Amino acid sequence: MGKNIVAIVGRPNVGKSTLFNRIIGERDAIVDPKSGVTRDRHYGQAEWNGKKFTVIDTGGYVPDSDDVFESAIREQVQIAIDEADVIVFVVDAITGVTPIDIEIAKILRQTKKKVILAVNKIDNDKLELYSSQFYELGLGEPFSISALHGRKVGDFLDEVVKDLPEKVEETEEGKNQIKVAVVGQPNVGKSSFVNAILGENRIIVTDIPGTTRDSIDTTFRYNDTEFVLIDTAGLRRRSKIKESIEFYSAIRALKSVERCDVTVVMLDATCGLERQDLRIIGEAADLKKGIIIAVNKWDLIEKDSNTALEYEHALKERLKVFDYVPILFISAKTKQRIFKVLDLAKIVYDERNKKIKTSELNKVLFPIVKETPPPAVSGKEIKIKYVTQVKTAPPVFAFFANFPDDIPEHYKRFLENKIREHFGFIGVPVTIVFKKK
Ligand code: GDP
Ligand code: GDP
Image 1 (spheres, rainbow, N blue to C red):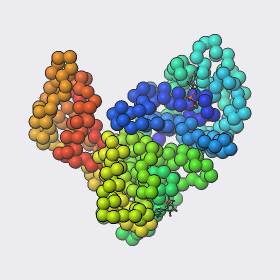
Image 2 (tube, protein in one colour):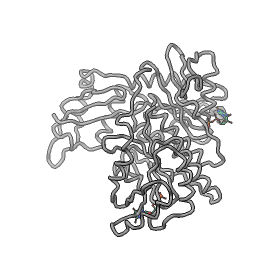
Image 3 (cartoon, rainbow, N blue to C red):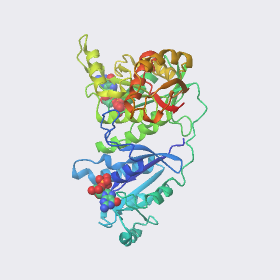
Image 4 (spheres, helix red, strand yellow):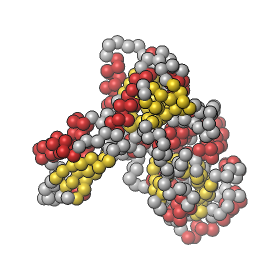
């Protein structure tokens, strides 16, 4: 299961989030201008020397209360060891070695995974002498960097990606399988849902976790379609610390989403859509996966004839640019509509694989771009000549124009809406590119 995950660990204030932001680059600003959704991210996609990887900032999962704070850091370092491929341990050159650093180093020395010690805040040559004190941590040569100014971060990243595989291999087998990742915050009902599905005789389980080595997925047939529920073994980890459970679920969710065709984001009907949910939806959308929202525990909601409609409307408002994501109301407890999730996953999967003929696309879209062309830029009239779907799963549409670089972002959104209006693509992130003609 090739997955490149780089986890950043360390005590607070050493510069983890500064380093994180530097690695993922400016394009992932804190507020996503496209959506207007605040994406206070703790993980993001990065690329260095042609190698793609996912970075996770454990600092995003810091508990409020002081008494669990240290044990939370210890747990999170352990989770990072279990789940990540490379662990970046950040320390602060100016403060020097602290007792928590020594604690963390002790845990990290026990792993065979690659650990890189980054001595941060070395903003200039004169400060280099502060680096050698960290040899005492027993983690090999310290890499001096300045996350804030970018100093030596390039050398450091060379080391981070050195042993990562060039390309994360997509398994070819299972072309006709629909891979579904069920993700969501702790206690929304993910395991209950999976167990409810697997407990029904409407399905035939062909492979369950544990029956073969390394198997963490469950494969089954339903309505003549083969489904894979990804990482059903990773649904839970016990901990007393809420933040550690959140960190663990986030990292597992991320790994599952990367491997799936369709992501089912599960919510608890009594809690609604929370920031972490928007974050995972954003991540699934960035990875161009099919997306469904399943509002679970619908049995707990007092309902009249309008409740579902109103609930859905309120959700769509909050989803903003992700309002193409279909919503289902289910109960894992009463089994209400649980199979609708699979039916919808099949629909979204097919939509994601759908190819619209070029002639049909142009017949519909050409009159629209003629009627509402992109705004002229410094006197230049922008003309879109034609459009074609260049890719499926995920779908990519190329619009050919005379000045492709001058077409504003909001026009992309306009075209996306028109494509959806006429051709559907429910639950599927659509990519639009402009090319020179
Ligand atoms: P975190 O709690 O580990 O995520 O730390 P932050 O990234 O929030 O950084 C803590 C403080 O250190 C902030 O005020 C940063 O601006 C500062 N900082 C981070 N990296 C550097 C650096 O390379 N040099 C200097 N001088 N300050 C830094
Ligand atoms: P997970 O952490 O997301 O896997 O959540 P669990 O499946 O462990 O469920 C958390 C709690 O919610 C358990 O006590 C379940 O019995 C309960 N639960 C799960 N689904 C439903 C549901 O549809 N209705 C109600 N009322 N309770 C549910």
